[in-house]
Image (cartoon, rainbow, N blue to C red; front, side):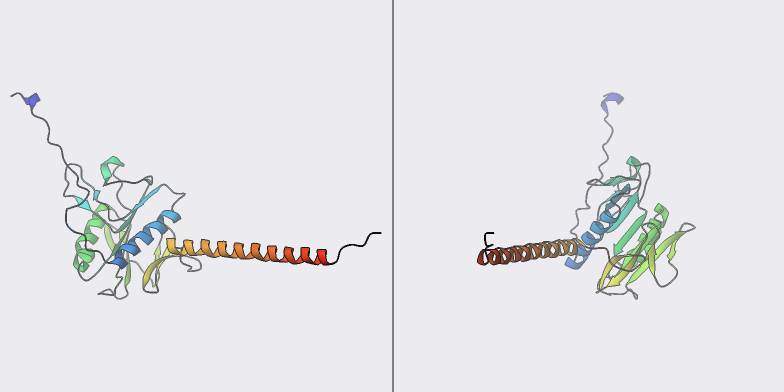
Length: 227
């Protein structure tokens, strides 16, 4: 056997770790809502929004991987991906990360992940505790300063990257207009608004038809006399 007969070993970058994912309904629904809202907000910006997707950051090392609940990478176009490999996109790593934390993941989220995300250059890191297991307040924001993710100053949690305020409203995390505090709509809220608009339009059309019928009836009951 010659050297040319030896084929290089193919490195596999799995789409999952094979372990069951134990997510609550609240966790999963909130993750989808946040991804939807972020995609809508950044639809005119070159940015990739995803969540719970394997992000590989070192070529040749499948163990070098993170899977944020929600993340944004600027400068990368939005499209469906099975995994994300940084070396295929000029080394771009997540700029913003949101983790939905719990007592089960608190030490990883506050410790290991916070350090790892800082090393990867994540500019903003947010932790939200949906069930109030341990975080008080339930929302916490960090910003990258001198290579370390440190708590954001002040009482408001504001993303400078996407110019929104993160707030806890009705026990859930919302992305809000930074000027007036109004939450950006979720898919369900958009559908409700469309339905209300359709109902109002139908009601208006019905009222116009009713008035026209009354007018026609009035005209027929009072015909014009010939001159």
